[in-house]
Length: 176
Image 1 (cartoon, rainbow, N blue to C red):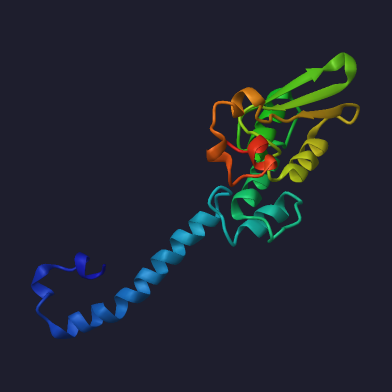
Image 2: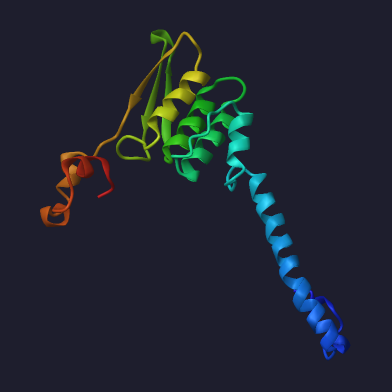
């Protein structure tokens, strides 16, 4: 690394070569640490810095969750800040579910209906999603969730032999 920045006329010096060989590992470690620090400044790439992001948004860190689930929770809280709109709730629920969602505001019934369009089955972090929506929704509105499952007409397209190793739960909630 350092050797690439030095003029070629110094390549033949054994003393300078020994110096470069001694300094290069430290410089590479410093560069790796700088890149890692930059990753922590973005909620989408943070690892050890997720705890700080969670603290800033009032979330309790759950180290049993994957980084992806924790990042999703932080990003949804980032999106959930401010005035509650249908579009904001759609972005919030999509961030948690990992797929497209639709949010309908049934004002006369004081109800929000969240429909999971892009995912099949219950999202893996449904409890976190419900908590985030409860925190973001207007207090006078209730929330209903519509979860998409595989229907018989979709399962009929697949042979029973290809489903042999699956449970009924897997068949109705997984991609076929």
